[in-house]
Image 1: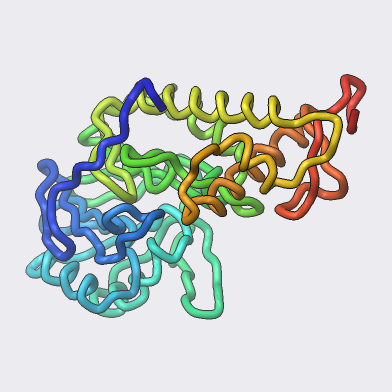
Image 2: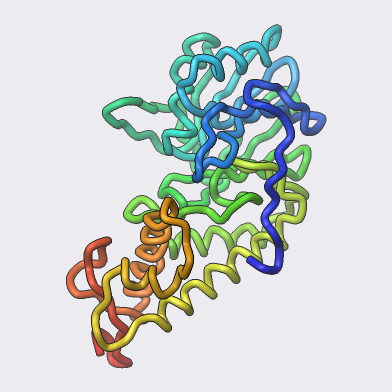
Length: 294
């Protein structure tokens, strides 16, 4: 990522409603971490009758801040980019408090939170308000059900965790898929956006430049993983030691999962081989020209 340094600036404290453009406001959730930066960005779109994208965690203070931010307005739509827990658990209490329609990516259910949208949005489908038009853009990769949303009136993209300016996106199989992620990045190069509003971190003001840098970063990572492989099978941990030299201990498992995502893609393409099904615990080696292991 030497072509473009990460942007670690972000305006506003958790709970503060920050005006970003004529139609966009942001409320930051209080859930900072190594994977969420300073917290999940919840966006409010429109005025008078509004939509919310990615309500975030089920934190009572965050939900109160969102309700305060739309006080005196009608919340018509609650949209979701994908079903990771830092993005969707606040949907249920927010919908209950406002009566808003829940729409977006395909639903899921786990032992703690349920997400059952009133309307599943397919690629190209729209949600409209008095002064906003939001079009779903299918971008699987970080998550299988990931959607971005185009704000037609401002040539803006709510990019979720697909593209962020503060960090690369984590791709963890089996829900994450590196081949899909790369294809979804390439798809953005064909779109005409002036700005991205990501799920974490500040705005991306040079979208295509960043997307090209992300593609180059992933292609380079793939080359280093292939270079680490040989005729003797290696574990993912051994590959991480060779590829991610000097990585912080708290990021080592994320690097292992990213390496797994690349290896799954390389095995699918016939450029690497695994002993048994590709998994976190499998061993990997270079594929022979005829296919399979050397």
